[in-house]
Image (cartoon, rainbow, N blue to C red; front, side, top):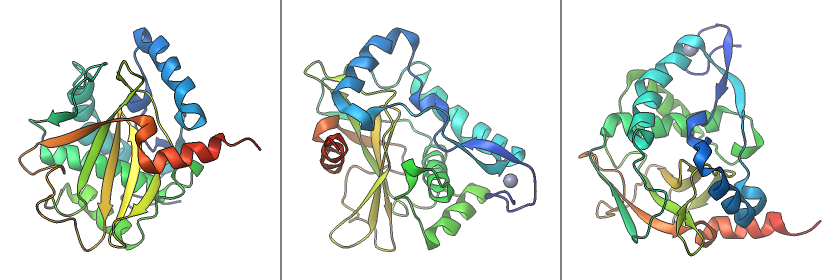
Length: 237
Ligand SMILES: [Zn+2]
């Protein structure tokens, strides 16, 4: 098998699709996390060890040092999003646009090439090769190409951050236009717009080249596509 990223015939690692730090809560947060998991039901289960033989060790290390380590520091050292979020919106600023965007695209791309059930709806088709090239050349492209927006996810009246929750990835269509992939990790739902017709330029909430991104703050059970999905999977056999 060839590495999916560099395409070279090399021994493959068991690669994470979503980096593990994004669903590994701090020990002191276990109690809070269990409470959230009871509320969100099966969809909120933490899926540890979602790995597949995808990448050679060089590509694995490249994604790790170029994208994952900087974003890990950004999100958790110290924690960027507080464990209780009372505001209606949450502004991320001072982001390194290229690193943050390519980090997200690397997860979306891995979800597309992976076979795991959790990511079966993520199929980038011809865009898979486009993103692979962007990752290889470390080219983030303009903000309107593969736009990224998202929501901080909270739960209960205490508005506890849903960190440590990961769900199945889903896809919707925007007005029969581009596809929007929804992935939950790192305490947020991330939306990726994939298609040749991006959202209007005026759309204010997507990741900007200036390194800002304004996230809505949403109760995880109010997240429309997921609430439908969650009620479906909760239905007794
Ligand atoms: Zn490789």
